[in-house]
Image 1 (spheres, rainbow, N blue to C red):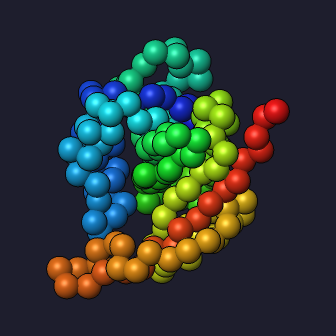
Image 2: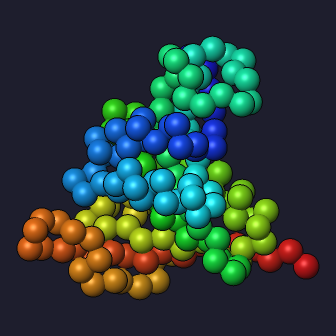
Length: 167
């Protein structure tokens, strides 16, 4: 099987991206959230498993490719904020989220960011462990940040990854 491939997200990819999002979350981002992120120039990429070993650099979810996951991040002054990081449920625990985190980190460093920030559900122990293993530290809690149901909400843990500053 071919190695995963990172590809910039395009508007033509949003149906596939949204399908993975819906399969992954009880309260997924909307198609419009992704469209707005693209329009606003956020870093938005997909992790694909190509249908052939030598995939050209310019393809967008080609026929036969498998969308493994996606990430959206935003640069604000000298910090990057991970807005969305999702891996398809049936391919989790295979290193794909770590690959997406590494891609975000590489982009953040090229932007001269001093830190990467994200929020994660307090009850998402697997994601919190993944982020800690990647060097993120838990620095705060946002009360009632995520929806659980029509009447209940869940806290978020705010996590930060300091980045070395080039001199």
